[in-house]
Amino acid sequence: MPALQRRLAEFAAARDWQRFHTPKNLVAALSVEASELVEIFQWLTPEESARVMADPETAHRVTDEVADVLAYLLQFCAVLGIDPLSALDAKIDRNERRFPAPGKP
Image (cartoon, rainbow, N blue to C red; front, side, top):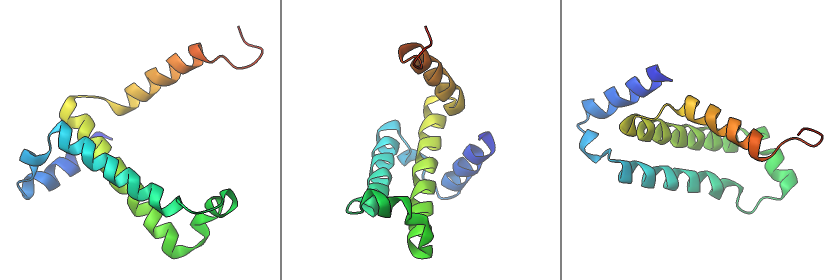
C-alpha cells in the first residue's frame, strides 16, 4: 500500500498536480469515480451484475473504475495521514462488537 501511495504521489508531483490534491478535491474525485462504477451496473438485473466480468469490454471498464476509486482513496488517505488498512481493521472490530454473529454474545 505505501509503495502504491508513493507511486501516486510521484505521478502527481511530476505533473505539478499536488496543489490540486486537497482533501476536498480528492474526496470529490473519489465520489465521481465511484459514481462511474455505479453507472456500469445501473440498469443491470442482479443476475446480469453477477456476470459483468464475463464480458471482456465491460470487465475492462469495471477494472479501470475500481482502479480509479482506489487511487483517489489512497491519495486522500495519504494527504490526511490515514492508514487505510488500519482504519478498515478497526472498523471491522467495531462492527463485530456492534453486530455480533447469531449465537455469539
